[in-house]
Each structure stands twice: as structure tokens, then as C-alpha cells.
Image (tube, rainbow, N blue to C red; front, side, top):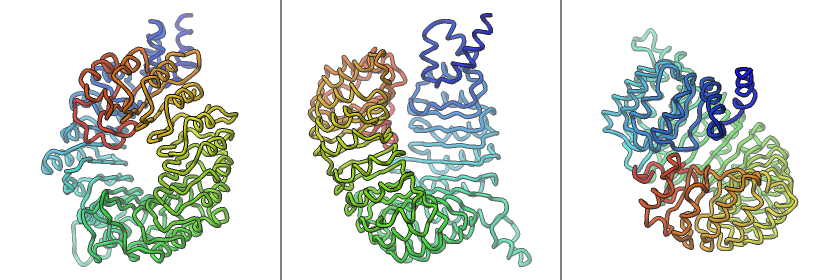
Length: 606
């Protein structure tokens, strides 16, 4: 009878819980611990540990019972090569090693020798060995994983050698369907495309024409590259070699203005039409602190693109300052199945581009208009008629005001809203607070006219947002004080991620309020997973009392940079992390979770 009960418990209840809840259940009694260890963990085929950064001991405890895994995702911020090597094996078909700040390229040889059956591999590394060592290790890995279908290698950092993937084209398996490389020289990318196109070894006149046609051996469908430059020559090489592409994602970060014959022009955009199956396109030029953009592309180039690629369902464009409403509107009207539309830094994009958006792109589900200064509330009112909209990002569109928030409130499928830097007020928060829009992610960062009263209007009204909100950013808001945090603590029961960075009037009392919320289990509140108090200068070291155990039991990530606690890193780390080895402390000013910036961390800061 006891065996039957245990079996029912495992099958009907425990197997429906996520890993964190399973760990909590296992602490209740020896019976439940046994049920989890023997009845649930061995049956898991997939394990995702990306949301926390375990140390070696924690990882070993978790992995000990997971004997049937075929898919594994690890946050490797604190893991060394030996720790990772211990979880590898021929049983793995899918492996994602993220934020590998302590790993060298020797991990590649371990993967190649221990995981011969891999189909999917993602690897994020912070730095390289010498290019020659890295290339040797990469070649060994690719030779040892002949069945790879998806390969994503991202090398992050300032001084990364862009020649790291010099030899990758010689070893890529022909089973590959998805490829992402960062960083890569444009010249190397062109040679890589030639590898996809010409696989024969004989260059005799008899088979010369065959060599010029796309190779049937490679069936690459998704290509993502971060380069030093994007040019017509590169685009033509890609479209000529991979006409079957479904997804193309290109980003460049040039150090200086490209020469006219080495830049992207109309010719390259028009060549994209050779990829007749293309449904997703991303072209972004990112130049931090430098005014470098696609200066040779204006509306005519986008006209050609919209005519050549009418089947696009996702478009992402960044660094096109000379494209105006006419160009962007042509995409909205020509691509009838467009679901995702993202534009960054378009200084000539205004409300006119969305004048007839409902008559052209009714299928829109995501719209992201970042740093588009001419966009106002009128454009948002038009987008409010797109009933399928789930994501609306208006970050740094400073002319957005309260007048459009009633339209936003009518979007019944909207789950993510970014109003960072908008000119909204407390009155606008009342409109959102009374609505039934199911927003789970909301950013009000830098909304200087929203105060404590506005947060009260947002969360203490009869709407649904206080019940659905899980991620909230109220950073850089001078009108926010402890009062707003009390309101958030009281009404946001589903909140798991909170950023209050650079809120100068937030004090230790707010931390106490959040800690008290965490310990009131009877209130039904979820536990905070990520908390960012970076540059909250009114916090004192007295807040350590509330940040220590048993408070914030579920916290995975805590940002403490530029606070008084940052001056005592070693003591703070010992106090807060002593009994919570899975908790990551960040003193470097990263955003929630260190998704960008982890590569600059030093090991002792983890």
C-alpha cells in the first residue's frame, strides 16, 4: 500500500512541479525526499538550471539523481571545467552552457570526447585562449559531434580575437540547420559561405557548373552572425550559398565608418530576395559611443527589401537613421503575415508610418520601437487596434503620454509593456490600473512624472495587473520612495523580479517590507527571484539584516552596486551568501540577472 501511495504521489503530484518546488518538497520529510529522489529525478529528461548559478556542490546534489537526462541547460558563472566535465556524457542530445566566465576552450575537447550524440549545443564564453589553441579545441569538438543540428558559439568581451573561428568552416557537420557565431570577421564569413556552397574537391571543367549551384549537403535554415561589418558582398555570398534560409540575423559593430564599396547598400537588400523562404530578418548596426550607421540606406532600399521579401513574419532593424515613414510603412504593408516588428534608433520614424496599420498588419503580435523620438501617443492609439498584440516596447520614446494608455488598456492579449522614459503621469497609471490587460512584465524606468501615488493607482485599483505582474522596473524614478515599495509589497502577489535601481529615496525600510512579504507564506505571495537595488544611495549596511537568511529564501540574483554595502564586498558576500550558495551577488551594475555584462565579472564577485 505504501508503494502504491508513493507511486501515485510521484506520478500525479510531484512530476508536475518544477525543480525549485521539488527541492522544497524534499525538505519536508524523509518520505517526500525519497519520493523525489527515487521517483521523480530519474524520470526527468530535461533540466534547466539557467535561472540560478549553482556552485559545484549544489550541481552535484541536483545531478546525482538525474540519470535519464537528454537535455541540460546550465548557468556556469561559478562552475569550473571539472564541474562541467562531470555532467557530460553520451546520453545528452541537447546542451546549453551559459555565462561560462571561468571556463577555457578546453571544455570544447571535453564535449567532443564525451558527448558524441549531441544535436544541439550552445556555449557562451567570456574569453579565449590563444586563437590557435581555441581553433584546435573547436576542431576536436566538431569532429567528435558529427550529428550537430544546432551550434551557437558566443564569445563575449572587449578584447576578443575575431579570428577565433578562422577554421570552423572546415569542420562543420553537414547535419547543421542552425548556426550562430560571435564574433566573426566579415572576410571569414564570406569564406564560410563559400564552404556551404562548394563542397567538392575537384575543380575540373566537367563539374564546374555543379560547384556553382547550392550544395545539397548543407541544409542550414537559420544563420546568426555578429561581425565587424555588414556589406553587400557578405549578403550576396549568404543568399547565393544558402537560398533555403528561413532565419537571417546579422549584427555588426564597426570600429570606424565603412568605405562606400564595403558597406550595405540597395544591392545587398535586394539580394535578400533570393532567399524565397525567408520569414525572419534582423539587420542591426550597433556602435556604442560612435555615430556609425547604415548611412547608404534610405527609403528606396527598404522599398526594394519589402518587395523582395514579402513573406517576412519578423523584421528587426537597427541603425537606419535615413529611413523615414515611407520606408517602414512599406514593410508593414507588403509583409502581410508580419507578426514581429522591431525598429531601433529610427530618428525619422513617426506616427504616419502606422496610420493604416490595422488595414495592413492585423497579425502583429510584437512591436518594439526603441529610441524613436518622433513616435507619440497617436501611433500607440493606432497600434491599440491590433487585437493580437502581446508585446509593446516603447523604450526611450519620450513623447508617449497618458492619452494613449486607454488604448493600451484595451489590448486583451498584452503581456509585456515597456514605457521607459515616457512622459506618463499618475493619471495614466490609473487608466492601466483599472484595466483587465494581463500584463506580466512592466517597465516604468525613468518615468519622472510617476510618483508613489501613481504606483498606488496602478496596483490598488480594480484591474487585474496587480494579480498578473511578475516583473516590474521602477528604476531611475525620483518620485519613488518607501511608500511605493509598500504598495508593491502589499498588492503584487505574483512578483518575482523587481528593479528599483537609482531610486534615491528608497531606504532600509523598503528592504524590510520586501523581506516581510517573503516570510508571509499565508498571503499567497510568490518569492522574489531577482532584486536590483543598484545605486540606492539611501540604503545602509543595516539592510543586511533583512537580506540575510531566513529572508528572501528564493532569491537567485541581487544587485548591490554603488550602495554602502558595496564598500564591504567580502563581508556582505559572506553574510548574504554563506548559506545560499546558489545566490549571485552583482556589484558591477548589471541589469537583472547579468544577461549582459557577466563577461566582465571577476571570479571572486560571483
